[in-house]
Image (tube, rainbow, N blue to C red; front, side):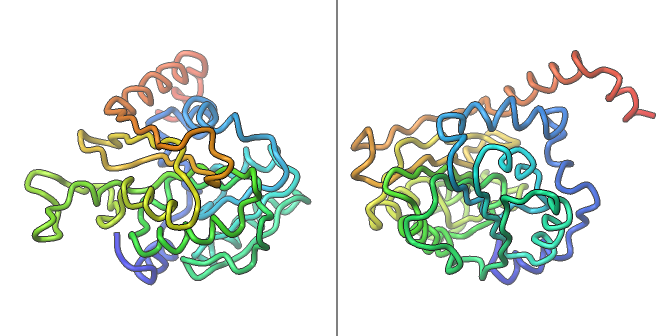
Length: 258
Protein backbone atom coordinates (compact mmCIF):
# COMPACT_ATOMS: atom_id res chain seq x y z
CA UNK A 1 0.00 0.00 0.00
CA UNK A 2 2.78 2.43 0.90
CA UNK A 3 4.43 4.30 3.73
CA UNK A 4 2.71 5.60 6.84
CA UNK A 5 2.58 9.07 5.32
CA UNK A 6 1.09 7.73 2.10
CA UNK A 7 -1.57 5.88 4.07
CA UNK A 8 -2.29 8.94 6.17
CA UNK A 9 -2.65 11.13 3.09
CA UNK A 10 -4.80 8.58 1.24
CA UNK A 11 -7.32 8.03 4.04
CA UNK A 12 -7.36 11.67 5.06
CA UNK A 13 -8.66 12.55 1.59
CA UNK A 14 -10.88 9.52 1.06
CA UNK A 15 -14.61 10.12 0.45
CA UNK A 16 -16.04 8.90 3.75
CA UNK A 17 -19.61 9.94 2.92
CA UNK A 18 -20.78 6.33 3.46
CA UNK A 19 -18.70 5.88 6.65
CA UNK A 20 -16.96 2.82 5.18
CA UNK A 21 -20.19 0.85 4.89
CA UNK A 22 -19.58 0.60 1.15
CA UNK A 23 -16.98 -2.06 1.94
CA UNK A 24 -19.70 -4.21 3.51
CA UNK A 25 -21.84 -4.44 0.36
CA UNK A 26 -20.65 -7.98 -0.46
CA UNK A 27 -22.35 -9.12 2.76
CA UNK A 28 -25.53 -7.12 2.26
CA UNK A 29 -24.49 -4.43 4.72
CA UNK A 30 -22.40 -3.94 7.83
CA UNK A 31 -24.91 -5.66 10.16
CA UNK A 32 -24.56 -8.84 8.13
CA UNK A 33 -20.77 -8.49 7.89
CA UNK A 34 -20.50 -8.14 11.67
CA UNK A 35 -22.91 -10.85 12.77
CA UNK A 36 -22.26 -13.22 9.88
CA UNK A 37 -18.48 -13.03 9.53
CA UNK A 38 -16.69 -11.04 12.23
CA UNK A 39 -18.57 -11.93 15.41
CA UNK A 40 -18.35 -15.72 14.91
CA UNK A 41 -14.57 -15.32 14.95
CA UNK A 42 -14.26 -13.06 18.00
CA UNK A 43 -17.15 -14.12 20.23
CA UNK A 44 -14.86 -16.12 22.58
CA UNK A 45 -13.11 -12.86 23.52
CA UNK A 46 -16.07 -10.56 24.20
CA UNK A 47 -17.66 -9.20 26.28
CA UNK A 48 -14.65 -8.14 28.30
CA UNK A 49 -13.16 -5.24 30.23
CA UNK A 50 -11.10 -3.02 27.95
CA UNK A 51 -10.86 -3.29 24.16
CA UNK A 52 -8.49 -1.53 21.77
CA UNK A 53 -9.80 -1.04 18.26
CA UNK A 54 -6.89 -0.08 16.05
CA UNK A 55 -7.68 1.95 12.91
CA UNK A 56 -11.49 2.11 13.29
CA UNK A 57 -12.04 4.45 10.34
CA UNK A 58 -15.46 6.03 10.75
CA UNK A 59 -16.64 3.44 13.27
CA UNK A 60 -17.95 0.66 11.07
CA UNK A 61 -17.13 -1.99 13.70
CA UNK A 62 -17.01 0.37 16.66
CA UNK A 63 -20.79 0.57 16.74
CA UNK A 64 -20.90 -3.08 17.83
CA UNK A 65 -17.76 -3.25 19.97
CA UNK A 66 -18.81 -0.38 22.24
CA UNK A 67 -21.53 -2.50 23.83
CA UNK A 68 -19.23 -5.49 24.27
CA UNK A 69 -16.77 -3.99 26.73
CA UNK A 70 -16.53 -1.73 29.78
CA UNK A 71 -14.04 0.57 28.06
CA UNK A 72 -13.24 0.96 24.36
CA UNK A 73 -10.10 2.74 23.18
CA UNK A 74 -10.01 3.91 19.57
CA UNK A 75 -6.65 4.68 17.94
CA UNK A 76 -6.25 5.82 14.33
CA UNK A 77 -3.52 7.41 12.25
CA UNK A 78 -6.03 9.66 10.51
CA UNK A 79 -7.29 12.62 12.53
CA UNK A 80 -10.55 13.07 10.65
CA UNK A 81 -11.43 9.42 11.35
CA UNK A 82 -11.08 10.01 15.08
CA UNK A 83 -13.06 13.25 14.85
CA UNK A 84 -15.83 11.43 12.98
CA UNK A 85 -15.94 8.73 15.66
CA UNK A 86 -16.12 11.36 18.39
CA UNK A 87 -19.20 12.83 16.73
CA UNK A 88 -20.79 9.50 15.89
CA UNK A 89 -20.39 8.12 19.40
CA UNK A 90 -20.67 11.32 21.42
CA UNK A 91 -23.34 9.78 23.66
CA UNK A 92 -21.18 6.79 24.57
CA UNK A 93 -19.48 7.26 27.93
CA UNK A 94 -17.12 4.30 27.65
CA UNK A 95 -14.97 5.36 24.66
CA UNK A 96 -11.69 7.27 24.57
CA UNK A 97 -10.21 8.54 21.31
CA UNK A 98 -6.60 8.94 20.18
CA UNK A 99 -4.61 9.87 17.05
CA UNK A 100 -1.28 8.07 16.81
CA UNK A 101 1.79 8.06 14.57
CA UNK A 102 0.85 4.88 12.72
CA UNK A 103 3.20 2.56 14.58
CA UNK A 104 3.08 3.18 18.35
CA UNK A 105 0.51 3.15 21.15
CA UNK A 106 2.12 5.46 23.69
CA UNK A 107 -1.24 6.56 25.06
CA UNK A 108 -2.04 3.06 26.37
CA UNK A 109 -0.67 1.79 29.68
CA UNK A 110 1.23 -1.46 30.05
CA UNK A 111 -0.85 -4.61 30.62
CA UNK A 112 -4.16 -2.73 30.38
CA UNK A 113 -5.95 -4.24 27.37
CA UNK A 114 -8.10 -7.38 27.39
CA UNK A 115 -8.74 -7.59 23.66
CA UNK A 116 -7.08 -6.00 20.62
CA UNK A 117 -9.16 -5.79 17.46
CA UNK A 118 -8.58 -4.47 13.94
CA UNK A 119 -10.59 -5.13 10.79
CA UNK A 120 -9.92 -4.21 7.16
CA UNK A 121 -7.30 -1.56 8.01
CA UNK A 122 -3.93 -3.15 8.81
CA UNK A 123 -4.17 -4.84 5.41
CA UNK A 124 -2.49 -1.63 4.23
CA UNK A 125 0.30 -1.73 6.85
CA UNK A 126 3.76 -2.76 5.68
CA UNK A 127 6.02 -5.16 7.59
CA UNK A 128 7.90 -2.46 9.53
CA UNK A 129 4.61 -1.17 10.91
CA UNK A 130 3.44 -4.66 11.84
CA UNK A 131 6.72 -5.32 13.61
CA UNK A 132 6.36 -2.14 15.64
CA UNK A 133 2.77 -2.90 16.53
CA UNK A 134 3.63 -6.45 17.61
CA UNK A 135 5.98 -5.03 20.24
CA UNK A 136 3.26 -2.64 21.38
CA UNK A 137 0.69 -5.43 21.51
CA UNK A 138 2.96 -7.42 23.81
CA UNK A 139 3.37 -4.41 26.08
CA UNK A 140 -0.28 -3.39 26.41
CA UNK A 141 -1.99 -6.81 26.59
CA UNK A 142 -2.99 -8.06 29.99
CA UNK A 143 -1.46 -11.41 31.00
CA UNK A 144 -4.55 -13.24 29.70
CA UNK A 145 -5.33 -10.75 26.92
CA UNK A 146 -6.10 -11.73 23.34
CA UNK A 147 -5.79 -10.10 19.95
CA UNK A 148 -7.53 -10.54 16.60
CA UNK A 149 -6.22 -8.55 13.66
CA UNK A 150 -6.89 -8.60 9.92
CA UNK A 151 -3.70 -7.91 7.97
CA UNK A 152 -1.97 -8.46 4.65
CA UNK A 153 -0.41 -11.71 3.46
CA UNK A 154 0.84 -10.34 0.12
CA UNK A 155 4.45 -10.70 1.25
CA UNK A 156 4.02 -14.45 0.89
CA UNK A 157 3.59 -13.94 -2.85
CA UNK A 158 6.79 -11.95 -3.53
CA UNK A 159 9.71 -13.25 -5.54
CA UNK A 160 12.61 -13.52 -3.03
CA UNK A 161 15.08 -12.56 -5.75
CA UNK A 162 13.37 -9.38 -6.95
CA UNK A 163 11.22 -8.45 -3.97
CA UNK A 164 8.32 -7.94 -6.37
CA UNK A 165 5.10 -9.90 -6.63
CA UNK A 166 5.45 -13.17 -8.53
CA UNK A 167 4.24 -13.35 -12.11
CA UNK A 168 0.48 -13.61 -12.31
CA UNK A 169 -0.15 -12.31 -8.79
CA UNK A 170 -2.20 -9.13 -8.73
CA UNK A 171 -2.90 -6.70 -5.91
CA UNK A 172 -6.16 -4.91 -6.84
CA UNK A 173 -7.06 -4.15 -3.21
CA UNK A 174 -3.84 -2.25 -2.41
CA UNK A 175 -2.60 -4.70 0.18
CA UNK A 176 0.77 -4.10 1.82
CA UNK A 177 3.25 -6.13 -0.23
CA UNK A 178 5.86 -6.70 2.48
CA UNK A 179 3.54 -8.07 5.19
CA UNK A 180 2.71 -11.74 5.57
CA UNK A 181 1.31 -14.29 7.98
CA UNK A 182 4.75 -15.82 8.47
CA UNK A 183 6.39 -12.51 9.24
CA UNK A 184 3.76 -11.60 11.81
CA UNK A 185 4.24 -14.97 13.50
CA UNK A 186 7.92 -14.12 13.79
CA UNK A 187 7.22 -10.62 15.13
CA UNK A 188 4.98 -12.16 17.77
CA UNK A 189 7.58 -14.74 18.76
CA UNK A 190 10.23 -12.03 19.13
CA UNK A 191 7.97 -10.30 21.65
CA UNK A 192 6.94 -13.39 23.64
CA UNK A 193 3.58 -13.56 21.93
CA UNK A 194 2.23 -16.47 19.93
CA UNK A 195 -0.23 -16.64 17.08
CA UNK A 196 -2.62 -19.29 18.31
CA UNK A 197 -4.16 -19.47 14.86
CA UNK A 198 -3.99 -17.81 11.47
CA UNK A 199 -6.74 -18.02 8.87
CA UNK A 200 -5.42 -17.12 5.43
CA UNK A 201 -8.16 -15.97 3.08
CA UNK A 202 -8.65 -15.04 -0.54
CA UNK A 203 -10.27 -11.59 -0.43
CA UNK A 204 -11.73 -10.68 -3.80
CA UNK A 205 -9.77 -13.15 -5.94
CA UNK A 206 -7.86 -16.42 -5.86
CA UNK A 207 -4.71 -15.16 -4.11
CA UNK A 208 -4.42 -15.73 -0.35
CA UNK A 209 -3.87 -12.02 0.12
CA UNK A 210 -5.18 -11.55 3.68
CA UNK A 211 -4.91 -13.24 7.07
CA UNK A 212 -6.73 -13.16 10.39
CA UNK A 213 -4.23 -13.59 13.20
CA UNK A 214 -5.35 -14.55 16.72
CA UNK A 215 -2.59 -14.08 19.29
CA UNK A 216 -1.85 -13.97 22.99
CA UNK A 217 1.10 -14.11 25.41
CA UNK A 218 3.15 -17.28 25.01
CA UNK A 219 2.77 -18.21 28.69
CA UNK A 220 -1.01 -18.03 28.34
CA UNK A 221 -1.34 -19.91 25.07
CA UNK A 222 -3.29 -23.18 24.95
CA UNK A 223 -0.99 -24.29 22.10
CA UNK A 224 2.72 -24.06 21.41
CA UNK A 225 2.51 -24.04 17.62
CA UNK A 226 0.35 -21.89 15.39
CA UNK A 227 -2.52 -23.60 13.64
CA UNK A 228 -2.64 -22.21 10.09
CA UNK A 229 -5.53 -22.87 7.73
CA UNK A 230 -6.32 -21.64 4.23
CA UNK A 231 -9.80 -20.44 3.38
CA UNK A 232 -9.96 -19.85 -0.38
CA UNK A 233 -13.77 -19.71 -0.24
CA UNK A 234 -14.01 -16.76 2.12
CA UNK A 235 -15.93 -14.60 -0.35
CA UNK A 236 -18.30 -17.47 -1.09
CA UNK A 237 -19.34 -17.24 2.54
CA UNK A 238 -19.90 -13.50 2.07
CA UNK A 239 -22.16 -14.32 -0.87
CA UNK A 240 -24.21 -16.69 1.26
CA UNK A 241 -24.62 -14.01 3.92
CA UNK A 242 -25.72 -11.61 1.19
CA UNK A 243 -28.39 -14.13 0.17
CA UNK A 244 -29.68 -14.11 3.75
CA UNK A 245 -29.76 -10.32 3.77
CA UNK A 246 -31.79 -10.31 0.58
CA UNK A 247 -34.09 -13.01 1.91
CA UNK A 248 -34.87 -11.43 5.25
CA UNK A 249 -34.61 -7.74 4.37
CA UNK A 250 -35.91 -7.63 0.77
CA UNK A 251 -37.50 -4.21 1.21
CA UNK A 252 -34.14 -2.60 1.93
CA UNK A 253 -32.67 -3.91 -1.31
CA UNK A 254 -35.70 -2.74 -3.28
CA UNK A 255 -35.29 0.73 -1.77
CA UNK A 256 -31.61 0.77 -2.73
CA UNK A 257 -32.54 0.06 -6.36
CA UNK A 258 -34.92 3.00 -6.32
